[in-house]
Image (cartoon, rainbow, N blue to C red; front, side, top):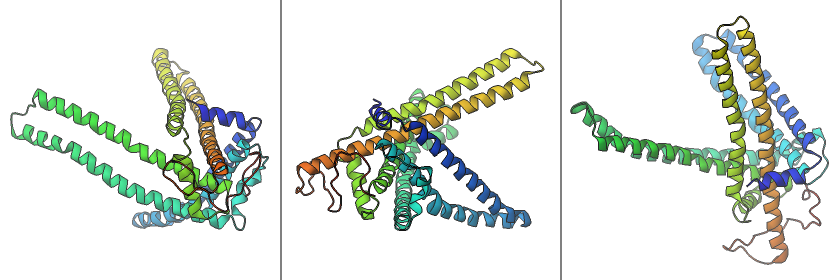
Length: 337
């Protein structure tokens, strides 16, 4: 079940601590910088009337969006380089997180990020509309039931109760299932960015094609990847619920003691820190599992191509390779960057 987490743990052996703490340090710097930018952007609002403050919100969000596209995304891809390098046992330094800002790399990162955002917004708009349409169609009978109750006896029959329960369960099912395409989209975006890290100089459209082939044509365990990461994500959630339930029980049992307030502050702080630490640990291996999925599937596609280098694209999962993709020996590092 956890094959890709295990594969990352095995292949990145000896570099886990370095990768984890470089990642944590990078995101701390990013959050501090974003907080400073947000404070600077909010300072002019102190001199505006309430109506002008509302108008100032729009340029604020626009500036933050630009910073995300032109700074945060490239830095995030630099963080993914840590994971890719660790998986391939290729040494790296902290400053490598900024390698995407070099001439020749930066424009490709920005173009890839903009296309990804455009695809995501279009997908979200169209898919969100379809989900809302289905939810409205499912819940349409509830309107009829409500009108019948208000204009009739004020009571609903047993059949109507059963229908309401069925519609409620169906609505919950649709809402839960509706997240699956977003999960698949997130994985696809990750694989496209990982393709950039692997081969940054190939055309952008080829990066999208490779990501698609890696995700759906290499025969990888995509469902196992999703389910295993979902189970991992449950760990900090369950721990969070258990710890705060224990704190609540402790507070009730302790009564109104003089030191109860101090004890609650200490316990809540400890529980929060433990949950954050476990969440970071889980996110590290979730990212590592996606990295392992990319390289295992990509290597499988390369193996197929090396066996049948002249084969054209087919619908039977054979791999359409790209002319500029180089052959490499031993899989002992990232493909030429």
